[in-house]
Structure formats: C-alpha cells, structure tokens
Length: 292
Image 1: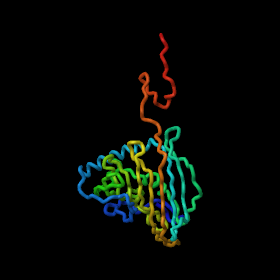
Image 2: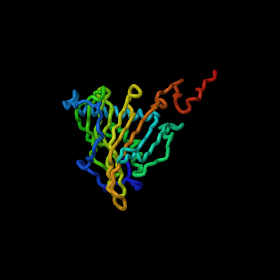
Image 3: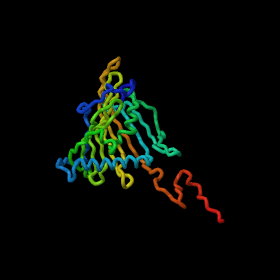
Image 4: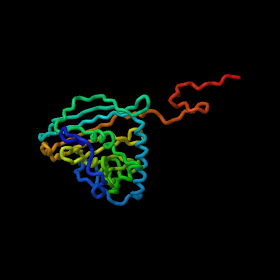
C-alpha cells in the first residue's frame, strides 16, 4: 500500500497492453487467519456455485447503493515497524465521511497529527485503496472482471460461510484490482470477510509503489446490510532500490476502522394533493385554492 521513501511517483505500470491470465495472478503472502476460522468443508454446496455468485453479487450491488446513503467515521493508522518490533513512524488521520447541504459526498478531517513516516511515503494509490478498495465490493457489474472460484464452506465464529477465490481475469494499465479470498454469509448471501491484496504493485525502480495484504471484516449495522467495520494489514515490503536508493525491507502495519454509521436522507416520497413534497422545496407549504 506504500510507496518507497519519498520517491512516490505516477501510477503507470507496464506497457499499454493488457496483461492476460495467468499473468494476472500476483504472488503474495496473505494475512494469516485467526483462531475463529473452522475447518474447510470442500463438498459441493446445496445450490450451484454460479447461482450463489449471481445472488451475492446482486446483494453487493444493493449494498453499494445503500452505503451511498450513510455517513460514517473512518480512522486510518499506518505504521512502520523496526527490527525490534517498535513503531518508528506513523501516519494517522480521522475523517468523517459526510454529505454537503447539496447532498454530495465529502470528507471532513477530524484529527490529523503530523505524519512521522520516514522510510516510506503515502502515495495517491494508497489513499484510493483506503477510500475504494479496502472495503472491497463485488457487484453484478464488477464480477465480469474477475475469476471467482468456489473453495468450500467454512464456519467463522458463529457465521457459516461460502468461501471463494477471487482474482482479476486481466490487469489493465492504470487500474487496480483485488486478489484473494472472500467469505459470503450462507444465509444473508453478503460478503462478510475479505482477505487478500490490491494488485498490481508498481515495481519500477525508483518508483516502487507496494501494498500490504489485508483483511477486512463487515458487520450487520442496520438490520439488513453488512458494512465494513475493521481492516487490518501487516506485511514486509521489499524495495529493490536503485538510482541512488538502497534496497531495504520495511515492515508495515495498518488499520482502518469504520464507525458511527448513520443513514442520510431518505428515498421515501411524500405525496400531498398529488404533488411530491419530498423534493428540495418540500419546506414550502402547498398552496390552497381560494374559494370561487
């Protein structure tokens, strides 16, 4: 997720040509799973995997639209860890994701102490990952970009899940994708856990832009939708050096917390005397007809 030192540059990667599978596959070490994951049952599911994919991607489309109507607080922490296991640099910021009076989504900085990262620097791609890709959503519209393969069924804590491998079919220039595993709630048919990495990394010497593997967890916050509540990432980034920069390995640890979800606005229409008074001028009282 991080660009090497202070040489963060553009996001150009590779040539203008598409990278086709199997070149789309990226090698990485995933985040280890905690003790809450039960054994994997690799038997066939009760309904065909393609049908499960169709249903949960449709739910994901609904989820993405629902999230567009919520405000929330996002707390981001990115740290570098030295050889003794101590934090030697940190980026920390708290933002409220809100709506303007015009109804447009915006971000308001709540807290942003001085950035003390020295061995790495945040890049534009890092902020895009935080805003768009760590809370990975796989909608009906997006699924055509990915190979989605059924792995099995697994119980995570008290939630029975279908597990799928997800990888981009092709990797196009200036675009980033998710690669890893997703856990889909067996009853709700919504993604509840994402474990993987945003790909591809920019490996050009002097312009390296690398990202850590991560796990994102969702929770049911409104009785219907499972929204992201916590992301954790931890990994060692290998910078090859060159052009005056030494090769180095940097351990990076990151967390993103999503809290205080609140629904904004309503799609309900209020009809009075045949007129929609839920429009922006709804505060005006409907005119009454004068008696003739």
